Image (cartoon, rainbow, N blue to C red; front, side):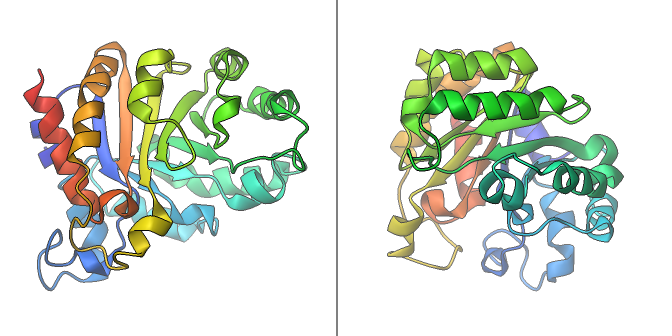
Length: 273
């Protein structure tokens, strides 16, 4: 049983965005831990992880096989779709890209939790309005055989309208809610909107990348106190966990050291039972 499962037996699952951070050796990984052993150790502390690296480059099948071999049976991966699909082609003429990507993930089997479709901020040069994008997104979601659970994140707060959430609900896609400088605070969205559009809710503590990198570019310790934000999030997350599965991933850019963010939030959620 992982440390996470011991402290958080609800349907809220918490992990980090990635695990390949040499700066974590010492504060999280035991001193002297080789990079090849990072994932195995991580999987003894948390039961889920977000794979952000696949956004920049699709994984090879051999890489995915290695992930599966290094993790216990109940461990899962939430994998970010490549930017080729979400940013360059924006869901158009990407059938082969999607097929190749999902085929590479097959060795994970039940260890694949979901795939995140994270889109950028679309201005009027990209789309005349949200309806045009929603139509394109709906066509893509309709083609998904639902053998792979999908989560969708958009970064234009003006597009967080009823039509968007109903579209996700129609196709059983999960709402991905991000703590991001462009977006409304998640604790507000979680209380104002029914974000259970699929069979789970996907939360991302991204933070202010530019702002925190003015303070540090090493990720060995917390450099921004996010206690107030995490405290505000704890109750809404706990309530959502009573309804269904919630997965949450913390990025180093949220406070400076993602594992510490996860542990602090775990403690806050547990204290409110």
